[in-house]
Length: 449
Image (cartoon, rainbow, N blue to C red; front, side, top):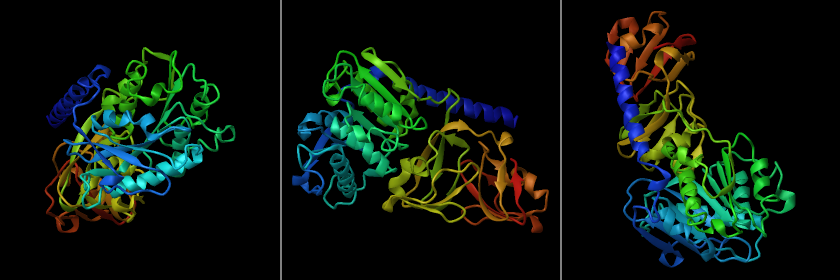
């Protein structure tokens, strides 16, 4: 009977997720989007960074979620206005967009890379600046970079310097010949490359095609060449009959916002493509979403879902604005205010100790980890163990595989309620989905729910 109930719960969750994704199609991406847009400049108090010249921040005015961002820089002998069309388009779809100018019109890609990285400092400061309308509204861990021509080459370089960058969009990118190599394009940041069939400035054979080929195969990457187009085709979301904007937004929604509903749009071949190549694999139809409650103050969280992106900063991104600190069982810390991720990637079977300013709901999307098929290694001493059960279950029954070995010293929940096998005492009661548990064992063993 319990198995039937579990199946029904997962089936209903699957239906809910699929229903949400069914409303997201290439046709549903409008220009403009559903949000109103306002702007900020240095005249409004935005930091004036030394490595770039002038900026405009476009932001959605009626979106209350923690906002992801992208910074875009123009190309050789071009002004900020040459790429400004991206600002209102992306902001109207909920993504803060900062367009910047360069200190010199003749700046090379390396200088444009420095400009993008410096602009990240300015954008992050808006999250704490007293009079900024974006104060407390930015997810400073979710920032993408983009650029046109030499700016696109600069964005590629920046990704090799700063691995915290979540995505790159290269608009007809150009790099010096000596920099077009595996050494200078070696990064793990998902990259979308636009190119033009008849680009007389950054010939796609010499530039965009090489960017794609030399970016590691382990890095999510896609190149879309627009048929019959020239060097400026991707400067506007209307390029390629609007398919440039649809793909760019979908790329950011998936890799910056972590919304997998946009993945099918990413791999849909545009009607205006003369070349379309990628290494993207979308999640299977078996993907589910688990809502994990992160309580105000200290708590221990875990998930029965194996997320698509296992980097801890991506995993925790939906609630990062309320997060003070997160720690694994060893004590490695994730500190959002410092953009420091000492945890690295999520480890299967592990739970995490977190401290929140306010209670928040964390949506985890991926494939379910079946409890009966996945054991959890418990090391001698203290552990933070995940709960793979999808519904409440008595803790004596859930932990029976290790309690029977008389190997358990104590099990505790985040409040401090304890299960003491030596005393036959169970103060925990039921295990709850989304919770993690502290377990101390005398010898290394396997926990099988």
